[in-house]
Image 1 (cartoon, rainbow, N blue to C red):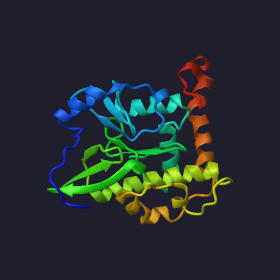
Image 2 (spheres, rainbow, N blue to C red):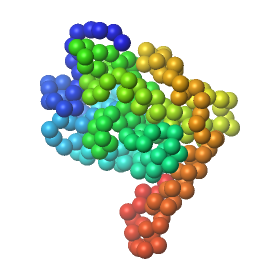
Image 3 (cartoon, one colour):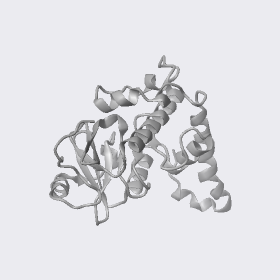
Length: 241
């Protein structure tokens, strides 16, 4: 991590001219037009978030977790609440602040899940410190002020990558010849990715092939379908995969 001058970084706790600039550039969030999210950043002192991709900025009036749910349900990706239950049951991915993942990418929350920054670890270029504050620069050029120290940050990024690799392994093990999580991640050539590649958790899988995928399907059925036994008319409120 290199020491440098104070960067022009987006702070989810403090309004700035950078927020005005990004809001001016933002378009209304349509989950159908977004394929991979780099990060979701709450707007300070008001409702809504900005969603950053490689090339665009989107605006949503919802909080971060509701925006993620809207995106995942639109694309029939993982239900965050169900996935969190599964990860906690398995016991290998921590007990709180669970990442969200599908087979294409993953996002992890920095603090509480409802209204916090969510980051795609594969899209992180570097993490650095200035005056005891930590910043993350993404591959699209965005710079964010981090509300936590590097050790906790990279631990959460590491777990998110492990979950992503585990899900991919369960779905793609017939087509990909891989034995460790790193074989399923396709990390870019960035300083942060190089740091991730050295992390112990990404050297060995912690579950059997397909275990997380099977548990997800079982948990999803129990979580969403059991209430229908009491109220069959409530099916309109279920986001079916």
